[in-house]
Length: 394
Ligand SMILES: *Cc1c(COP(=O)(O)O)cnc(C)c1O
Image (cartoon, rainbow, N blue to C red; front, side, top):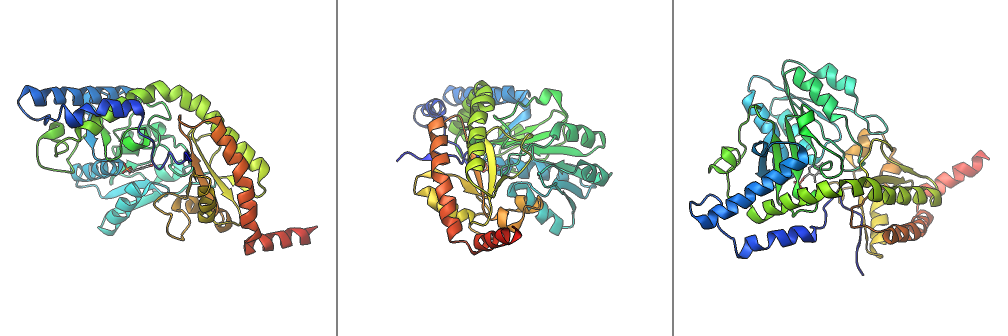
């Protein structure tokens, strides 16, 4: 049975065109791009071609792109670079709903003597901008705000924030791992100074990412060693994956419209039909300012993990909370920050689609999920109690 894969915010299928582009760089062209000989040089040229393709997707210059090993490394590099190049400033601003790649580093830095402000969100997951601006000070080294949330898909007004923050003299970084390839990004038209992305979230392989650093931004490398990436990221390049990321960037630009029309339509159908067929279900997050591929739906009075397990029998792949929080009984920090009630947060499922999803797959989920929820609610003491209360009221 072919998986019905609706977990694209966790990772994506590597596009067949990307695989094809990569293959010769394992076997035929295996030279080191730093080597002096032509054999290495032709690999270096291909890496530069990938850099140009990725820069083009972002509206950036190729010299502003640093290839890294993942989104997490890009986030860490950006935050450490801002702190090391502004050693007198001891304040960091970020949000309560960041991916662990930013959140856990910010918490660590808080334990190491930095002052860290975590900006709250409202019930729809929108950022409290006044709170952010009120906490900006001359001591603020960096403001790091994600472009789009991985759990709810909610999009933050990062371009507006970037303008305010940089006017104030702080560095602005955005974790755009979920935004790249799903929303148009033009770094030529905004003030974002650093931007992180990850290959495996946009149909390139796992284990490759990139960090955009705007020309003129003070920078200190995270990995020190050889002179690769113009001294900004040491270590021999993950050549094949970088070439794959370049190809994926080219495809992302070509597929942006499909993402925002066909995929969005599939997402909307899935969401609308599930809400119509299942009582006590609601969407988590701002339904308008949202990625086109993502819906997080709370099914009250059931366990998300149990839903996943029963969906798994039909090979339907989705996610409860974020991949990093599943496995623990705590509901996701994102849903908690939004104030989603316990009984809803625990039964929240994220469906994240891609251009590889079909309407038949959406229809199958719409058919299979309602009886699953019904079955689980029959076993749920919370649901029984809720029904009793509801019937008392009439
Ligand atoms: C997946 C993800 C990351 C981490 O990227 P990796 O390449 O897996 O390290 C960071 N931020 C967000 C928003 C993500 O969705």
